[in-house]
Length: 116
Image 1: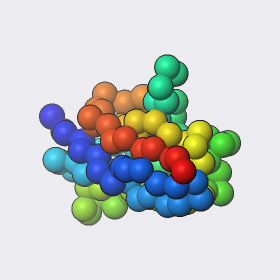
Image 2 (image 1 turned 90 degrees about the vertical axis):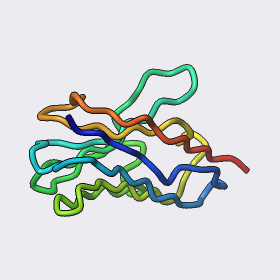
Image 3 (image 1 turned 135 degrees about the horizontal axis):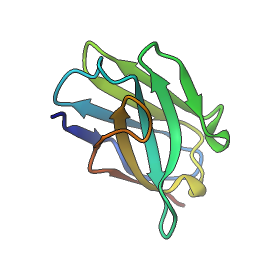
């Protein structure tokens, strides 16, 4: 059993940056894909970014060019660097891992609020 713990959320002004981290209690090298999901108030959870075990990323259109996902299998961490944040990026961000997405393992979530 692997536990995922997110950190790095907070309140930021539009145009600002945040760096989210997902730390796993065990090896992430067995997970073919890891991703970040976002759930805005009153909306369904949405996939924001995903990265394969080989390091290939993919992003939902609304964050392309602003967000960067990376993974470090040696440190069992996945990072989501978010730049140029917009109010519509507000939500709870969840780390997820599995063989396919959505995977079996979820973190508890970290709140991101973009507001002036």
